[in-house]
Structures are given as C-alpha cells and as structure tokens.
Length: 603
Image 1 (tube, rainbow, N blue to C red):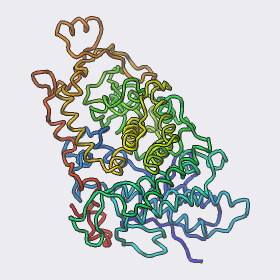
Image 2: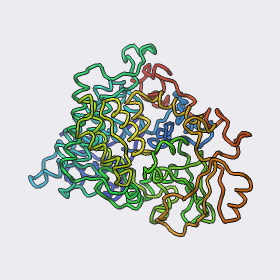
Image 3: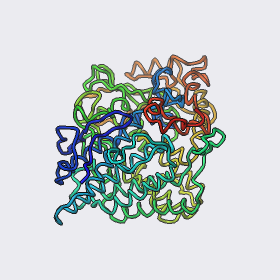
Image 4: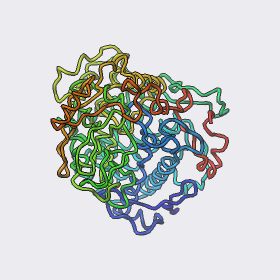
C-alpha cells in the first residue's frame, strides 16, 4: 500500500500538529505514514483533531474584520493592520497568514480523507470512522470558503501533496471550488451524527447540524455576488462584480441553503437562548448551550493564537483586577445609532465603557466605544494570559441558521414565504427581549425583506467576522461604506439624522469588584446641550459629565469637524470593483510558480 505522509507543506513551510481545547493529546512527532497513524481509529482521530487548529486565525476577525459599518481600526495609518482594515492594499501589504493557515488545514484534511478512506474497521467502529471522515470533508470545505471570500479564485486540490507531488498550482474558478465544497458538505452531513447522538465530544468539532449550517453558508456565497475576472486573460478590463453566469445553478444553491437550514430547524436540537446577553456570557465562561453549533477552541498557552478578548475586547488598564486588555479595534461610531430603541443587542455588542487603573468604569466617547461580545471582565478569571483569555470563537450560531433560512427562501421564492418571516422574526424578537410589539413590521416584498435581512445580520452578528464579506456577497460593499462615511460626517457635525444626538452624557462612576462582572452598560442621561453652570452642578452632585465628541478634535461649535482625520482616513482606500478581493501576497506568489502572472488584475 502506498504510504501517505502527514508532512504538511504550504509555500515550502512545514507546520506541526496542534490540538484544540478539550481535544485528544496531540501526537509526539510531526511525521507519520499510513502504516502507523491510520492503523487505529484513535490514532486517526489525532489527524482529524489536528485539522481544527488550522481552521481559524486572528487575521479573520482582526485585519479582515475591520473596515465595515460596524468596526474600524484604532491603530496608526502607517500600521499594516490599519491599512488592510481601510482597503489600502498592495501585494506587499496583504494578509498572508489566512492564506497559509487555510491551506495547511486543507492539506491536513486531504491527508485525513485519504487515510480514513483506506482504513478497514469493524462494524462497531464504522460510525466513528464515518464521523471522522465527515469532519475532514467539512473542514476542507470551510477552509476553502474562507479563502474564496477574501481571495476569490484560488488554487484547488483535493489530494494530499505527498500523493500528487504537485507543489505548484494556479487559480481555479471559484464556482468550481464552491460546487466541490457543496458536495463535500453534503457528504459530511450524511456521515456526521447529530449532537444528540453523543458521539461528538465537544461543540468545537463538527456535528451534522454544524455541517448543514456551513453548507448553507457556502451555498449563499456561491449564489451571491463577488469580484470576478477572466482567468484566461487576467485583464483588468474584465474585472466586475457579478454572480455566476448560470441562473439555474444560482436557484439550486438557494434551495440547497434553505433545505440545509430546514433540516436543522426541523430536528429541533438547537434553539435561541431567551437572552442575547447570555449567549456571550456563556461563550466567555465556557458554558455550552443549544445556540452554539460550532466554536473554534481557544485554551492554553499553545492554542490561543486568535487572542479573542484582547485585540477585539474592551479597554482594561494593566493595573486593574482584570488585567490588561488593549483593543486595536473600535466601533464605527454610527453603529451605535443603527440599533433601534429597545434592541438589547446594542449594549452587549458595543461596550460603552472601559476599566481604568482603579477598576472604575469610565464611559466611552462615540469614537472610543469598543467590542463588547468578548469583554475580559465577563470571564471567570484572567485566563491563560491577558492576551489569551480562553474565549472560544463563535463560528456558527443557531440565529445564523434562522437568518440564512429566511434569506435563502426570499431569494428562491422572490419574496418571503411564511416560514421566512417566522425565522426572521424569531431572531428579531429575541433581540428585543421577547417583546414582539417592538420589532416593527416585517416587509412582505422581496427587496424590502432583503434589506431587512441585511440590517438584521448587522445587529445580530456584529464583530463576528461576517459583515465584510456579507456586504460583498450582496454586492453592496462600496455603496454601504460610502453611505457610512457620509453618515459619520453628519454625526460629526450633528446634522441630518444625527441633529438630535447626545453631545453630553452624564453618569455615576462605579467600581468593578470581581470577574463575571454583572454590568452590561453604564447607565447615563443624554443631553443635546449643557451650560458650564449645569456641568458644574452635576459634577458637584457626584456625576461625571462626558463630552461625546472627542475633545481633542472639536471645532468651535463643540462638534467634530466633518472630514477630520478620523473620518477622512476611514475606508480611505475604498475603490469599487477593486478592493472587494485581496491581492495575493508577493511572498505567497514567490513560492508558488503557478500563481505567477495571476495576481489580482487591478494590482
């Protein structure tokens, strides 16, 4: 039998196996062949477990999670992460980690699939073998989705490098890859057990419902818009935002997405938690629930590479009881006012305070609000380290199943059928604490419902690394960000829709005393105007008076000058039919001759 070597090579770089939280112990060496690693189910499981460590990295939520109507960079404009977050790309300033990590996971999965398919096991072990094979198929497809949504057409292989001997490959049409991923996930869903079967030991591994959810996600991307060009000529003139040309296949993909979601819904194992806040308190304290379908494990010194809760958390001073949290990502100021009155998701998603050296909660200005879903003070302790908080990443939640179902039905039927509205309203009603009277009227027409889905995903999945490419698959990235920048100018000048926003907020300063801090948001009273005498009186009464427009860049009227540096630098590289897809880093092309001459045509 031919040996299958588990020697992972991406761009001539070898990567060692790692394991995720609560997974099996990792192997003690980094090279195996089919004569030992695939001779028992337990050893084969080590290979599959090793795949998971290469399914997520910090770039996915950091550089690539910024530059939206939700999130912006706080770093200097000369910083490469700020540049990527504001669409200032060049082949030398383009993320490479996501590219190499995703391919490492794909190679792991290819090796696992090949090895598992060659195994002979007893009837009693076949369900476990099927589960492992299903996991490997699902991981491969999910990694290809992450590559396509940021890099477009990419190299595509479903065989281990050691088998093919091919260390060089060219771009392949994303439609071919998407169709392969759909097939992989349909296969995976047929092999994997439901979570209730008790075979899958952790929410950090694929179940049938997780595979179906990622299948729906892939199908929606495959049917949606993206920046495309002619791979034969690679001509800049051929670049355009478009769906695939096969209208029949687009229709099929929407049905695939809807059917996959319906299977999960009908199975009834998953549900929304009554409280949106509880979703993220559970996540931060490692309490699993039926809303979580798939998490990326973060635990210990070696398996915390994404640093959830540090780069993308709230500000916490190094001297406070929670330890340092230094967000390099902030809330796009207009996002606060995008939420409707009574939407409880706002104060969970956006943190309106930071923790200072004396453990006091100090309210943020508009431009310094931070990400609240992964906040350090909600954790049970500091974690492995202040920059390694042991917070799993939410890859897939049940609310996504409901909203994808609603979206797919609307696209398939050219309007929202009853089931589409019901799924949409489940999510929205939960957002308003269960009060259906507050959610407004759900649109009944195709475009109105589509717009409602676009907005609802913004409120439900803020800072979960979906918004940027959601806007791309809807074909509205440029238009949305252009509008956001105009809104921000209006907000800065306190004009238009923002003419009556708070210029001041007055609050009582309180002190945090322990982990699992019960506070969600600092209560305040907002004022459009305050006289110096008013401010003095309030301060004497023990209040803090906060000017909401950053005091360092105010104009003579006490507001931000429109087009000040904060605003002018935001999305500064934005250019339609160019930045929707990243160029491939020069360092990647240098080690893959097959990509030479195939750079993004606009770069």
